[in-house]
Length: 185
Image 1 (cartoon, rainbow, N blue to C red):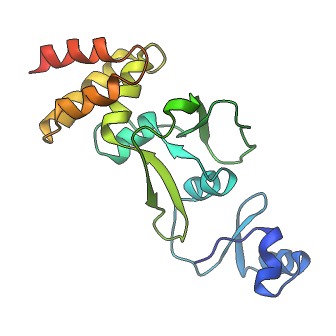
Image 2: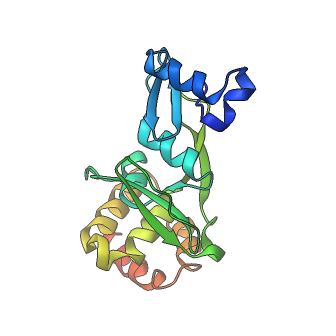
C-alpha cells in the first residue's frame, strides 16, 4: 500500500486538509509527522518506513543489519541507520540511531531491500560490510559484537576473501579482522 505525505495528496486527487480529515476519521494511520498509510494497509515496520521516507539513502547498518542477517542475538534498542557524512540528520519520532559514514565508502557493500508490507525500499549493508563496520567501530559497539558475528557468519559458510576485500577498503579494519580470522579458523 502507498505511503503518503501531505505534499503527495494532490496526486490522489485530495488536498492536504482532506488527507488530515481522512486520517482523523481513521482512514489513514499517522506513522510519523507528515507520513501516513491507509488504515487497511498490511502490517509493516513503521521505523523502517519513517527512515526510508525521511532519507532515501537511509541504510540499515551495525547491530540492526547484523540482526537482519541473523548474525547476532543482540536486540538493538533503536534502528541503526547510516547516512553519508555531512548529510542532514532528519528529525524523527521513531527509535532511530543515525550514524554518519564517510561518503567515499558509503555505497561499499550497500544493497536495497523491500520493506515488507510497503512499496518502499530501504538500503542495507551486506553481512561482510556489517561485520567490517562492527570491527571498525569496536570501541563504541563493544569488542564481542564483531567477533561473535564473524563466528556466526563463518558457521553459515561465509568466505573470508570477501570479508577481507571489504575490510581493506575501510580504515582500522583489516588487521583486527585478520587476527580474529586467525583465531577462529
